[in-house]
Length: 437
Image (cartoon, rainbow, N blue to C red; front, side):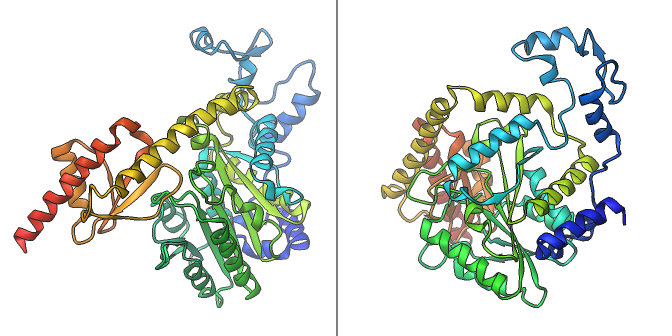
């Protein structure tokens, strides 16, 4: 094993030994080169005042070389902030600004020990880093039965982990904390589990209440006290889009310092929070009780980044940082939040109006971009196809009976027409199924 990797492993084992037990084989082996091109270039950037002949960019007139036609369109930004490579961990100013934002929006983080966020190429990349560092063949990845399909690809197909599902909702329509607890405790013999907590949930748009959140934390603590090492990942892709009386914080804060066997990891980003999907700017943040252990995990994260994408795109990091620093940021974000909340509330009013009685039921939703209809007795895929072919409406069929509707991309005046068309398609498919029975 490379001495740098061993040194990081020794630090983690000394400071937070249970975290060391959670690392995958790749997680143990990875490191960030201290004497490689990037580290030497960083040193030269500080000291090489006469000539810096290190990293592979071209310069001209004391700044990064660039094409005028591109710079003309990006003239609000200095060439040094868009054309140079960003550091593997991301722009330092952006990392600091995002950490400050996290503290402001998550008061439960006050006084907790957690790392500086590392910039990722959006949230999927952050989840992929978690998979590389902590998932080995056969390790359990515990997710609800209503989940984002990319979890299977990222953890199951890429890393060979075993996907363990539990029902998202209990019989009372609330979060199924007991199901989560049972899924965790089923891994007692293996002694390890990776838990993905995605709120607001994709595909259902559900966020637990504060009481339900406490029950989730309690379930994870119970597993830890039973001797199970838990990598607890909060996938906060749709964070802050909370429209009702649910949790308005990430569970990351409550998980930080919860137990020596719990490693909290927060995956979030500007992607959806700031409505910049194509910018691909995300973050990964580790919680614990030891600064040296968190620093070692950060170095391993940089090793994964260096080995895969080298570093994230610089222009989009600059754009996001510029937005976070703008005095207009909060007001403009609040304006978009109000639009999204209006759409969600309009959908709920429509569904509760009685207009579509008997056509479907719907899963509880209170946040995010989506909601899910349950089409009892008929195929969601058949309805999806009918909507496309006859009504020119796109939806997502999930499993046998669930139909996901993204109200986020339908303006409020058109929502009733959207659900009228879904209603018509459902009735047609149901009638055809009855005729064939």
